[in-house]
Length: 194
View (cartoon, rainbow, N blue to C red):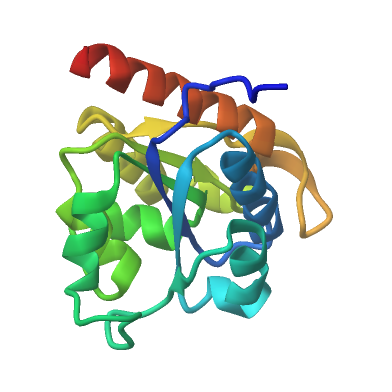
């Protein structure tokens, strides 16, 4: 039986993973992206690696994970530029307040943030995950407003039980919902390329 084609078939998705407790859901998303036919590369921040190891992503994607601008994978490459050129869509899941602030202000102090600065002309989707007090902080709200005004797409966060044990807004959107949004972005890209 032939495999059904999806909107992600042959689409290059760069998954940026940052250091929130919800990082384990990004492993599930990576698996779903591969199953949907996307070509996936994963970039993890140092703090993301403290929650889940790169090996988890390597296992579900069957490809190396990028964690630093200073440790190349394979041949000599300027990783943040090569990954930017390669990507059709960039998804940051989960997106911490720290990464959102850096994105909004063009701070490039690690591989992921350097990529996010360089790929500003490509579709970017962020899925925030943080405590309610952080999400409602005026600085974070302003950073979100800045990013969305520049065309960055946002999914979530959702209301529910948070890692700290409280109820409120800040939960990462569900991986299946994030996958559907990435598929919508891919469909729009394919229509534009016509």
